[in-house]
Length: 478
Image 1 (tube, helix red, strand yellow):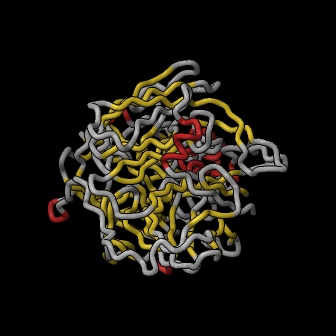
Image 2: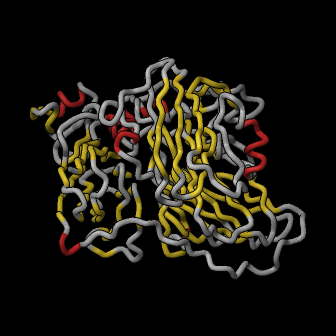
């Protein structure tokens, strides 16, 4: 297992790195006093070569935005209207989905469901505002198991009017790659072993597209660290040796500041966490960041490496770290529609049959069609099918999700955020807002939200191999 690291990229060095080139994302200065009514960006999806692993290994052929992995970080204030022109220079169709952003349905980037895919050589313009501050990301929804796996993703940061009082605001996009000995990407995307088990788990993990040894920090500084899991299937469980991370947001939505359970920050694919880290070490010290999620597969992600500078402060900063809530409608649990959603299938799941194309078929027929997962007994193909649920617009909804399988599933709902209100019948202590909820094997969870965004919305497992294997559906808000 390769270990990873990344040196800090602040906004100034990011701009100096060439992001403002013609093929890159055009970023306006953050210090601009008066925001224009519209900000425009360009993302170019194309093959590229990047140094994922570093010398003596050769560069890796990837697919990237603006010839980089991850793609350029888009950073705008809350409420800012933006226009993003996506140019497709790949040899296949693509789209862009704005993960976690409550966009209009036509801007959601789901092929054939909300838009026609962007053909090779063509472009598409996404127009929307960003109603919530927080940490979000963008990625394709067309053949996402291969396109994300080859490198197509990037961070979308929406800034608060009153940001946290920190010394640095840093983004780590966590990537997972299946590389061969020559550092090339293994071309076994979508194989049945991955689809029917835990998904495409790689052998090389990167932070912001690079494998390095350390991340430079200064004694006494306070850092806001935005973690984005952009992996196809890997679940991260990060432990920060010698430090006490405090979680202040999940999936872009503020949460009461708290220490993560057991000191470990767990992120399923597509999930995000904003943490505050006080650098309490001494100059010259090093502390490991370790991923311990998978039993007997722990590895060192990187070292927090303290420089020799005089500490910025001798005691941790006493300024408050709570974030203001976003303008999300609060679900009325007493008057909510209630629905049961059961996840089935996979190896050791016992699923013998499911509905495919409106007909009940046996597991052998399902597997012949590449399907081994189902939601409420339906194994879905493609992105367009009859709605799993139809919800009345502006009505509160409670969905009980039951994972009747032997595998984890990060379940993502497009177009909405929801409160996670219970797990296995026990109320959650913080009733956190999320857009992707990680369900452990045989676990039940209740989520609650107001169905206020009209349209047909994807609901699917964000282990991308599980999605293509049938674990997806459409929720209609009428």
